[in-house]
Amino acid sequence: MSLNVEQHNIEILENREFWDKKPLLRKVYAQFYREIASKLNPAVPGLIVELGSGMGNIKEHIPQAITTDIFPNPWLDRVENAYHLSFGRGEVGHLILFDVWHHLKYPGTALKEFARVLAPGGRIIVFDPAMGLIGRIVFGHFHHEPLGLEEEIEWNAPDGFTGLETEYYAAQGNASRVFGNKGFKDELRMWRVVEVEYFSGLAYVGSGGFRGPQLYPGALLPLFGRIDSVLSRFPKLASRMLVVLEQKGDCGPAGV
Image 1 (cartoon, rainbow, N blue to C red):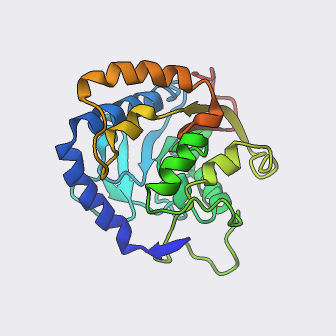
Image 2 (cartoon, rainbow, N blue to C red):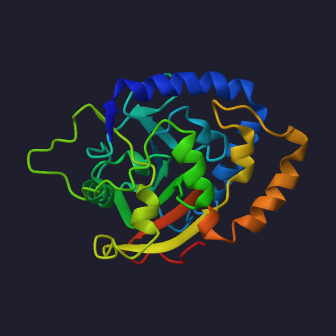
């Protein structure tokens, strides 16, 4: 589904206000960022780049990360377009997409560009909504972006696509559809799927996210973390997923 692209930056500015007011949310996100950081492969040379950084919070956990978005903001390092990255061939070791994959209308076209800038063995780390039971309920009923589960995924852009169009696309179910089954195996044949990990995300749900009410006191976060560790063993319950793709090539140990 496509929306007004200006909505993207409006949401970022609004989220910054909520972020400052919700310490529990910040702690939950810190856990997500630590999971992402654990997937970095130190054997791979090159830059660490986050696409669609929004508020740029990843620097608290990966200080060397280059933060980017399609809009300039004073807290970000640079403006980047996923379909036309300014980095040179093989210059990047890791690309991080936190809640970005479901905004890629043409994921195959984006992956071709990612392959260009990644070093051999370089990684794409995707953290996105998962369409388990909790994910379908929470993102399907309490989030303004569509799941898009019945919409066709256009893997490659049509002829004439420049990547510079100001179109805001969202389909929250796309990561589950692409990485959660074998239907896109051929499209991903140039990549090594190192890992697909699922999280129930109950601690996040109970935090209320950015706009919802907080449903438990911050002191209970460790308890919710323990509950999450049990529920996350069951992908069919998941609300979040972490995917590690690796550019095929020999760059030493896998690192996970």
